[in-house]
Every structure is written in C-alpha cells, then in structure tokens.
Length: 443
Image (cartoon, rainbow, N blue to C red):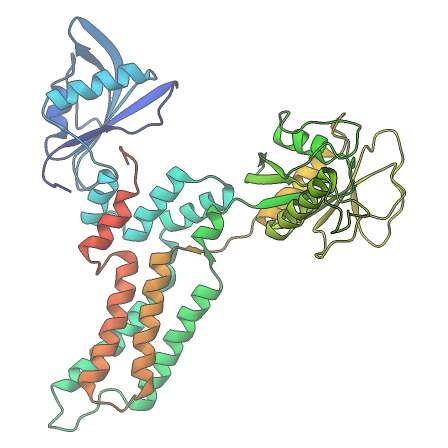
C-alpha cells in the first residue's frame, strides 16, 4: 500500500439510503475536497454545510473535517455526507479523483490508522469482522476487538515477559562478574505464570471459525409429522412441499432461517419409517426407501442440533435415534390439548396458525447461539498460532532455567515477538498484507 498521498472511497453501504458517505484521507484531503465545493470549506469549524458542484449542478452536503493526527486514520480526513443516491456518490467520487485523490485500496483507511498508531492490529481485525458480521456472536467479538480487549488481556503477560527478558539480557553483560539479576527459580516461576495465563486465555475464548459457522438443525420424526410445514414456517417461504400424504419428503431439504441472533440452516430429513425394506428387496420402491433412510441418518449425524418433531394426534412414541434430540416439538397443536410428558419438556406449535412459533424461535436461538449475554473473547487462527509460538518459547526456557543467559534470552525474545505480532507491535509485512487484504473498499 502506498502512503503519503490522498485516498478517497465511498465508505457507506451500497444501496439507497437517507445519506451516503464519501471519505478522504491524506495530506491533501482538505484541498481536494475544496476543489469540488461551490462554498468554502471551514476546516476549523469541524462541521460545515457545503454545496458540491459539478458541471451546472450543485447539491447540498455536510462536510466533517478532522485534522491529523487527531483523526481516525491519523491524517487529515474529510467525510462528505451527501443525499443517499449511489449514482450521486459515484459522481462525487469521480470528481474527487479528478481533483487529485486516488481511489483507496481495500482496507487502506484502516491500514493507515494502524500505521499511524491510531489502532492496533486486533482492532483493525475488529473493523473487518464488524463489517462482515452475519450474527450477533460475530458482532460481539468485533466489538471486543475494537475495544482492544485482546490487547488488554495480553498486556500483563507481555509486560511481565519484557521485564523478565530485560533481567536476563542485562545479565549477559555481567557474566564475568558472576552477578545474577534473576535466579533460575524466579525465572521458572515467571515462565510458569505466563504460560498458565496464555493457556487460560485460549481455553476461555472461542474460535472465529465457530462464530462464522452456520449452525445446522435437523428436523426428524415419523412421516407426516409436520416437518415440512415447520420448515416453511421457520424460513418464511414455501421451501418444501406440504401434503397430508405421508412420505412426501424423499430427500433432505434445507433452508436458511433468520433467528434473533443470526442465521441457521434448517434441514428437513425424510420421515423415519417403522420398518424398512429388507436388503434382498430390490424393487424400485425399496431402493428409494433405503436411500431415504440413509439420507435421514446422514442429516442427523451431520447436524449440530436435532429437533424431534411429533404430531399432537400421533399416539405413538417418537422414533428412536442414535443420538438424543436437543429439542422436542409437538406439531398441529391448535385443535388439541398438549399431552403430559413429564420426563421432558415439549414445545407445542402450529405452523398453520403460528401458535407457539415465537417460543420455538427463541428456544432455537438459545440452542444455536447460547444464552443471551454470554461474552467470550474470540480468537482467529493468527492469534492462536502466535500464542502457541509464544508458549513454545516459554516451554523452551522452562526446560532449562539455569541455561546460559544468551540461550534463555533467545527463547524469551521469540515469545515476546510472537505476542507482539498479535497486536502488530512486531509484525512481518506479509502478515499485514493478509490482514488488510480481507477488507472492503472504503474501510
């Protein structure tokens, strides 16, 4: 990425809105913005009502001016808030580029904020995660990264590690005087404490890939239990064919359903028959029935959660499964009272009238995403690898705490570099490139 020039991009979501934002950053931000205005830009005022001009047209806008280094990127920044027309935003963008700005690359605004010390690398990752968040868990994780929570959690360990390394390295200069600045026992105690802290951080955190995983919920039960109607009601459209004839669903059908805190995948598995065809029955009907059973078993095995669906008017016990159902649902509930099943709680619903669907949706949300309010730090693969490298360096130092100071310093330095790489204090250029390449334009 180039630095030192002025960049511009549309920084609001694409589509019609009340307002759109075109953002400039760089040493020439104020001059470039002024070149497109019919009214003067008052930088000192901070916020100015202006009129943008091109050809014979002028449009009203609001200009927000931020003088570097006290800005989001650490440079001079101008945000032009214009009427929410995508076409208008593109015209303004072209005008600003003609005035001397350059189209920003993906993630370049956040990259400049990082290079200018306005954010650390974990906060930059938080911006990218917030933009692409598909559920509440990802959004909470993004907020924690943006707030610098990971850096705060690592800071005591980094400080202790830096202090320990300093004591070991200063001893290198006094090897001939036989002066010890930190004993082997004290070194071992510190290393053990740091390793325990890092292990706790990992064990108490979740993984980004798990947050991005779309939970899968399989609907299982006897044929004609109302699974297809329930799938349609949950996803909000007619995804599966609904019929009073048992066995309508021949294959595993899936659709996405929007729950309060994110999307889930609902799979409607074929109904489980009481008796399947014998293996020596080679008729087409038997062949299809065996495949139906196999697909249903595969859907159950692959699902994160299993929803047992049982009709209210079905007096049989639910079908036996190889795994325990996570939630029990009684369908077709409107005309009949709910039978007593004291051993387990059932949710009574009607896909036709909507009865009980709110309770079911909230229960599925808790099942898929955990109880509301749970806050756990989320780590990505880069964070985990850096922490693993740091723990490896600590382990090498702990193996022989009485080793020569030069050897101990080497292992401790490796650990410190690894942890510094998490926040970007010590990060190779290729790592920075991978982080910011995932951003969208304008961020």
